[in-house]
Length: 252
Image 1 (cartoon, rainbow, N blue to C red):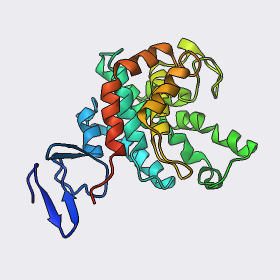
Image 2 (cartoon, rainbow, N blue to C red; image 1 turned 30 degrees about the vertical axis):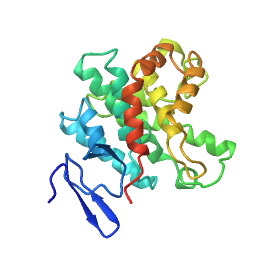
Image 3 (cartoon, helix red, strand yellow; image 1 turned 90 degrees about the vertical axis):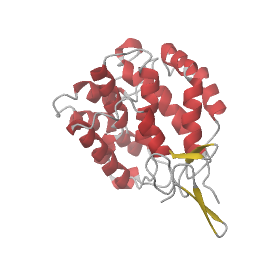
């Protein structure tokens, strides 16, 4: 096994190993600083304020997200990523560890209600009809009903219910506005948009951090809570690093 600062040349192919888990990361995103390498998965783990709390609820949340990823044929780290990125903002407002844990779970499980959306809609390659969009828009309530039944996850469930609301009241499912929307959900909205814009889709390549930043600033006070956008701006350097981790190309 190579040590933390080594890589191995095999023919024309460079094999890179994560300094934290020791696993080969040549076929996944990485961050490099000199000759030290780290996979995105481990980077998220390092920055995750809740990563050390390996209790039953954390295990349940991670398992549910893995199940959803399998259902959606998703191979990325979207749910884990937005949960960790949301914590970067949340720590600016909240010090209490239990509330931070609730926000983390809510962000991690934000799309869990899509388990109840039919495959014909969830996996449809083309545009959705109006009726199909209406069905897809039920996923926050479906997710809420799933997670609210678990003792100790009430606040997380409420974030799941409200993660598609907008600060100006034009979101769904309840058209909440302003402080009616839980703080965790308001912070999550900014991060979800950041990840959506900077991620590759089947129909387009992901845009740069600066493109996402411009859109987030443009929607300040309408889609997004101004305080959440200000927190985003204050944490720009950290978030840039985390976005860069997923955008790095493998060695070749």
